[in-house]
Length: 429
Image 1 (cartoon, rainbow, N blue to C red):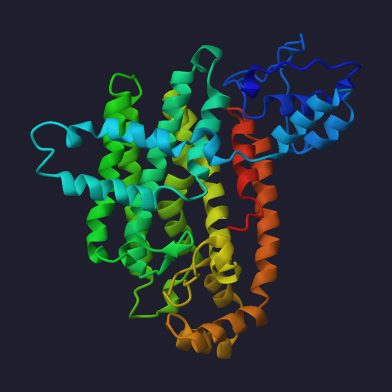
Image 2: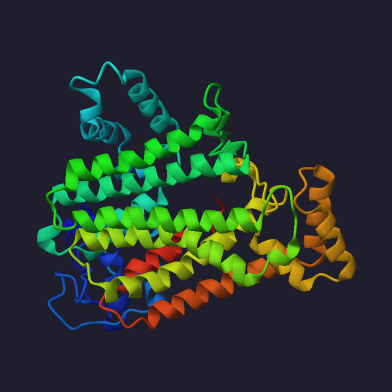
């Protein structure tokens, strides 16, 4: 593990220490909840306030270090790479854990009665849980590694963090299965949506319930005796309610058979994003790690939630942009926000800028599942330079998020949030 590695440095320029500090601390046990201390190779215990500009300069810091080439290459790879899901989130290992967690369905007197349903559950998990980017799951693990004390960084606890990451992926699959049916989508992650599979159809709604119940099977099997168990159960239930409220807002704002552009306000868009995306995609992975290390107080969670919900808004705007301008082969689905009458960031911006003729054309063509109508809407987007407006928004929003992290008055390590922000900036899928 990187967290156990030791590096020896010679003749270090002290002004480079904050950057070196980031390099060694990235996704490791050196970052602690209350103290920004120097790593062990340095004997000083002076706290440093590390800003995002220093943190973004790891590669520059490396150039000032007299490291053996092998260590320099190792550091470079570690500081600039993103974790591959397979490194920690082994699918076969999860399947073993899942079968153990659902043992009450596979054994005992009822096993013969429900065998077909259990086989179906396994097939559904294979199809819907695996194959995604797994950003949320990896954030649970990396957040745990940043927050945990040395005695908490055991293999057992890291495996628990991985299991919680899988639980988030199960929740994500639950939402996607149901959402694809409601939106009548056709592709997800480069393959047909689950409900499009022969023999599934609307029974996919029941499959979504099965996915969610599987989360609680894993929690009961692995966390029942942990002090954080009740917090984990309540968090999953709360996030389910928050996300379904957000989905309800989305459906009420964008009915398939009634295009009313007056509903598409910035206030309504912000509410949909906060409730449908922000809580489960951004706050939840970090909150799970906080509970796992024993940080359960409300003020700390509120501090984390405030900045993470802003990242969630940033992420959803990106998603709306990619739906219109992303390549289907890259993003893994065919964008259909225009056809589905979605209250997306793009249409909200267009309505603020459109003249009377453009607004009439949008009212006539938005929400129609017709290639010509979609082309007309995209032409208006081009006339209004929506793509350029988005590029400016993306850069300014990312800089604002960095400033907010720099100015955070919290005991939580800033690196926790900076790594999250870096994952999503200028993403292509």
